[in-house]
Amino acid sequence: MACVTPVRRVSGRTVTTLEGVPEADRRRWADAFVAAGASQCGFCTPGIVMRLAALSGRHSAVDDTAIETALLAHLCRCTGWQSIIDAARVVLDADGAAPPDRATARTSSGAAPWSAEAAARRATIEGGSRQRVGPEVALGHGGFADDTAPAGSLVAVPRADGGWAVADSLGEARALAGKVQGRNSTVGLRHPLDPPPGTWVLRLQTTFVEPAYLEPDASWCAPGGEPSSPVANGGAFGGKRASPVAEVARRLADEHGRPVRVVFAREDVVRLGPKRPPVAAGLRQDGTGVVHVARTPGSAALSAWSAALHRTAPGLVVHEVTIPGPPVSATLRGAGWVEGAVLVAGLAVMTEGTLGPGCTCRIESPHGGRATATIGGDGRLAVWVDAGEVLDEVVLRSYCVGAAHQALGWVRSEGLAVGEDGSVLDLTIRSFGVLAARAMPSVSVEVEPSRRPAVNGSDAVFAAVAAAAWVAAGCPDQWPIERGGTS
Ligand code: FES
Image (cartoon, rainbow, N blue to C red; front, side, top):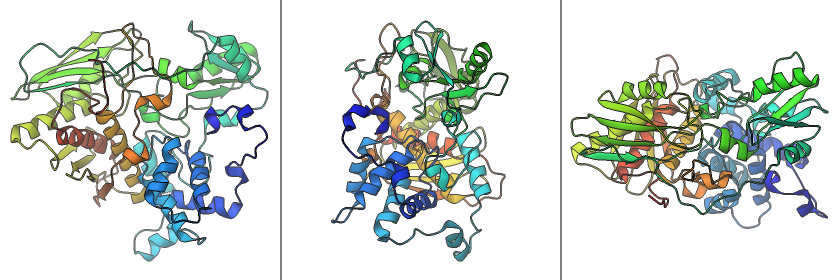
């Protein structure tokens, strides 16, 4: 993993990157990733392709367990793993044959021929920012902001006092800023909000959750120019909407009279980037109740979060409670309305007396996407989605599996350890509790052919799967339900 391997550790060794793989093999992997929808933002993809390409030299058969084991070293936040495993199967089983060409496959099956433009439209609707779909994204050319900065640019990184350390190189800037490598802690998760006082039939407490987009915030700007967009390769689940990097790059470039790159390290994203706010909720049988939502110093008011919650849970009263902690935001995926929808769905299933595996949770998002999710007794997840005109089924399916992955992680394993004083204690991406390939159940996605205009479908899937995971587990009082906490 290039991002965490100091060069001195590979002294005397041969290092092969994706650019060093023979062109025919690179093409096979890239085509397979496109055919399976296995690359969304594409940030993790080159490393994953290298890991999988190493499997193709094995003499023994490569089964799914071998692929999942190989993927343990990697994190992919977008795809939910299943499409990556599908892509690996295409290449590893093909024994040197070319993966199916998407355009040809679609035409011979009678469906509309593949259109890069339609695929990009669907990806843009699901990802929330302009997206491209194609083999170049799988090969690591997804349009990452920092990649296009001119050589010789100054580099700026955040200082602990809120200012910026500016220097000729990243190393010098980090030294100036006094950056210390972030670590994990052994501190358990806390649920920082007490349950609202009252008598409730259904309760829920959650904790700070990191959106965990993989590419840290970055931008660059030339003096008098326009800064590069930190969301050029994907929407970061809404987590970069208020990112300061573009405006800081513009200001510093004008101040210094030279192009300036502004780059966050992972620790900066965790300390400065927006989190899903913790909630503590209590519901009565009739659907009324109270939700406390955590606001932290320096975070904007959560009135948009409350308004969104009321769209799906009109019987709930929301109170903001100010506590110490990292920034929280109402711009993250489905903020507010998903929490409301999940609480309402949980109450409905509880009232029917059918808590446990096999319950189907049905969600309609405020944007018109519809989804159902069911977790069977064997743990398998079945999803149905109606996102209007499909545009590209592979892309839509991939986003839905990714949304299911994020929802399962939120309910089962994700959270940030935050001290009583509000400081974030877990500073590496490994500590967020993102589900690894091995922990991901099989997901089937049924896509509704629809004549409605295309709308976002994966956010409805996110809500439906979160609700299904919660009710399948019997609606326990605290998330994450499978990871230890201290309260
Ligand atoms: S495609 Fe893997 S993190 Fe985005």
